[in-house]
Amino acid sequence: MVLSTGTNKIKTAVFISGTGSNLKSLINFSKLKKSPISINLIITNNKLAKGLKYGGIYKIKKKIINFKNNDIAEKKILNELKKKKIELICLAGFMKILSNNFIKSFKGKILNIHPSLLPKYKGLNTHKRAIENKDKYSGCTVHFVNEKLDSGKIILQKRVNIYKKDTPDSLGKRILAQEHKLYAKAILKIFNL
Image (cartoon, rainbow, N blue to C red; front, side):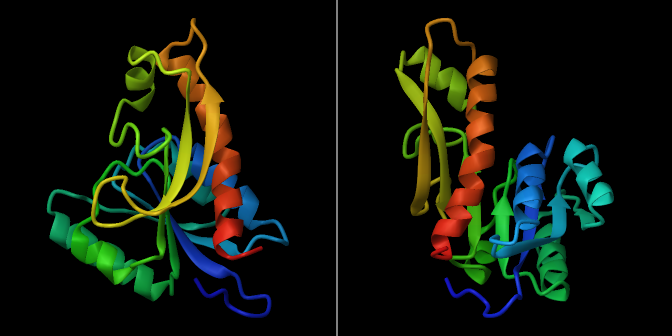
């Protein structure tokens, strides 16, 4: 990935569907001098997403996209990305699967954070599945997005121990705390910073 020279930060869009805690940590990261990105757009498929409040707090443009028709939704998103000259997409708890065409049009420029140590536990309910399998640890993964679900090239991973008394909720909270740190580290890594 080529980093813009000078002080120009990479214009980034963050896609969310829920609380936006990873969005918040990415915004904080983007404000650091060493950060190669600026967050210029928040996209969501959920008008009730709690994370939308960060758009207001940090004066970042936000767009709520209705996904009743995927093709129309993705065209609208691509138009927004073009208007804002977005160069990088960070998926952060975005609960929609993007089409192959969409991914191709942003090939190598879409990142995702996933709450398991991929390739284990692609998809949903990762913490529950790890506990039910009696795994000793789980974790999180930042990876490039390709046409297959949770299958793109892995950038960074972080292991988190699973304790006997863990519930999916308690494990999820500990993993989420690591996600907040890992996403920023992965971005620095891909830009060789």
